[in-house]
Length: 147
Ligand SMILES: [Zn+2]
Image (cartoon, rainbow, N blue to C red; front, side, top):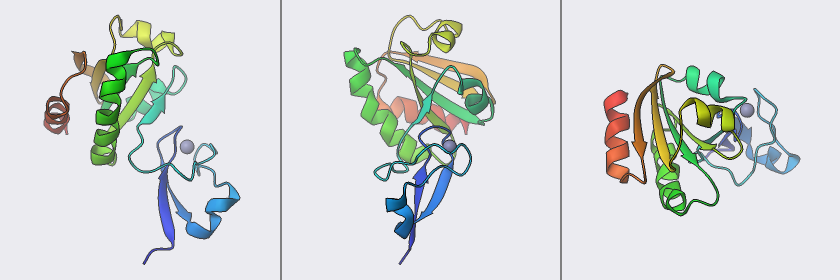
């Protein structure tokens, strides 16, 4: 029986251990002070932006970045796959989502012309790219080969 819960910070991805009795008191991330959503869970991909991309992806051994946009139909199909992978690999790899409309600097740097595009990084360096909604098994196999 546990009296704490783990909430992934939606901004920096850090895992915060939060006492259950404090959930109603507006808990904040211990590192970046972003408010933690009570409904958030361990399976949430990290929200990447032009501002945090380099520090987060650069410090991860392995990172998967789903480049997407709200108007993109195939992106909606791959969304649940990314969520699932975040729950599966969240402790061993950075699983993130980048809205290409809101973050043009990163999108242009990696020349994202078609979405969804999945970027795979090893030690901060781009190691592979998948364009289109790849099957979950293919993405999972790629991540496993990089860990
Ligand atoms: Zn945080």
